[in-house]
Image 1 (spheres, one colour):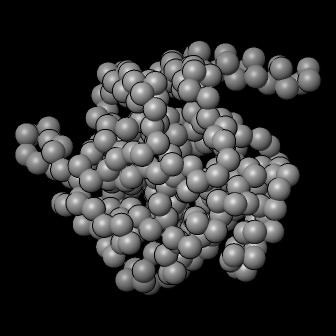
Image 2 (tube, one colour):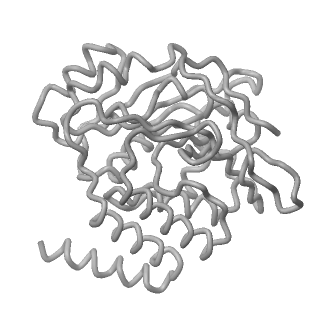
Length: 288
């Protein structure tokens, strides 16, 4: 079933070119082996009611970027949750000034993965959207992701490398690294992702138990993508354009974070190795 974007300020064509296992054109990557759980927010509401959309935005010194991000947010959102990672500028004050109904969480841990974990736990909507605070992901694309979910997806995966997507920001090194890691995951897990390391995603609340976010860094997108696929949920890739960070310097480090992604891929493939690594991490925490 084609995924048609709803009203957008930056419209683009739907995804194309993908082929299903039978060779017929499809607009999604689909692996469906079991149904997601049926518990969660919104069960008391009418099935015909529009799903409530929660947006989670991790922040760290993004005061100057938030006006651009917030002005692109659709007006019909259920809630916007900012998870602030110990900012030293006026990020929190800016968020509250720009959107008086914003929910601000002061992050207990550190890192993007931990921020998303804390934000997800606080969501009360049926649909959860992951959005960056630096202006690189366009909030006006949110209806496109919601449309994919309403059309049957469990998880709407943003992609810069399908028809209608693109990037103004990706460097040659990051592009090569993403391509290599993407091919590695597709080979190991039998997936067909086109853009492994892009963090603009949306999903139904019921997917959270399958994701079990338990990492701290930028490897969180890879972790989520692998676990969603392993759970056999329905995944639609959605075209998205990545823009330049508006102000400030990214906390992403291509080599360092690439190694963390590679480690995550290996740990998820080998449960015994993952358990051993968890013991090592717990020991380090206890010692420190």
